[in-house]
Image (cartoon, rainbow, N blue to C red; front, side, top):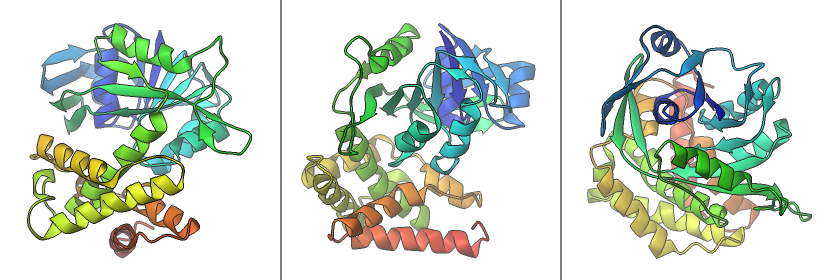
Length: 310
């Protein structure tokens, strides 16, 4: 299968390296990482050590692929869809943080859209080298729009893009499955991210400390607010269950620095808008309260504004 990984950062590079064992892979990313991959190949360290040789480019236009795996930051999704639309893409799967990426891809592409989550952990050590910090799985589900405008898994009975995507991952020995309840998984992931990412970023702590000491109460409240908003959106999330899932993720990734912490430390724009921000916005639309997510979003946005990122 011809696969484009659009967004060759840490996660995209790891997935591209793994998929390269069974598919024709092209990474779309930025220099100096892309130049290093072209010159020396892509080296993976950590959970397992190996080398891969995917193609790599900084130009994502005019590409032909059976599948595009989108791993860019959420604020770059529209640009990714624009570039992919200049080529020929059979299907696109989002493995990104936050809510709304699938809608953005669907607005810019005519191919089937697949939503997904992954629990793999990765970090770019240096150009051309990605550290595999945690082995995980990939879960995907079909994404469509019903007559009421709500996004739900809908595909032609004769076609199942999500199953094809999962099979492509499994062909490269990546644990992957298709799940018709993908919306539930996306909201659960959002609750985990809302509890961990902004707090680690603002407090400058690693994941394992979020549910310890003075930040624990606010992490719990952030996750519970996501569950409340999800239920208003028709997704049956249990507050206690997602809070415990957030605790479990924090324990499993105790030594990790969250992506938002890394972004703030490097002076980069964060994904706060599609994590805490979208929770606060949708809570307001439903007439319910999400004060912790609203405050976390305001604090991170304030930092970004102070750094001249907006």
